[in-house]
Length: 211
Image (cartoon, rainbow, N blue to C red):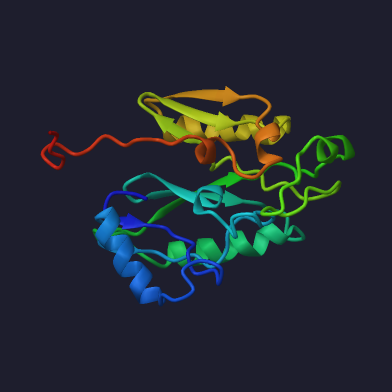
């Protein structure tokens, strides 16, 4: 979410089955205090446990600027998902009427679960089976913004790990980009840094009354 608008992926049939798109949008506006909702059709390829959480696909870096998970490989199933998201984002405006600037963050890999990794994951009936050869939903967009810092996952893919740090350092020049090595261990269970942190944004002055 960014000031004034949100990017949701809430229309999957297993979520809010009795609500229309318009009803969901009204609730988002009421609860999040936004004026505009931008809908994306797909999440990151392989993100089956969540049916496509937005924090693996894209996020607002600042007003009018969106970071988007990307791949240049036209044979990768992620390619068409990223292309469709880019088409939607590039043809819309934010709550203040500004065209969105889209900055691409290339995904790593593709990465796949090994036999050893699959054997080390405790299976849960409420989650998809972790099987050897399963595509991992790894994304550098799934980072955490702290006061003065960007906590970003690293997946052992040196080329794209370094590129993600370079891009994030340019996008957030006043933040220190901190690498979390071994984030692959987190993605084995689904999600990553942004998913496992429960960030608490600072309230705007005068909007919260204590006591």
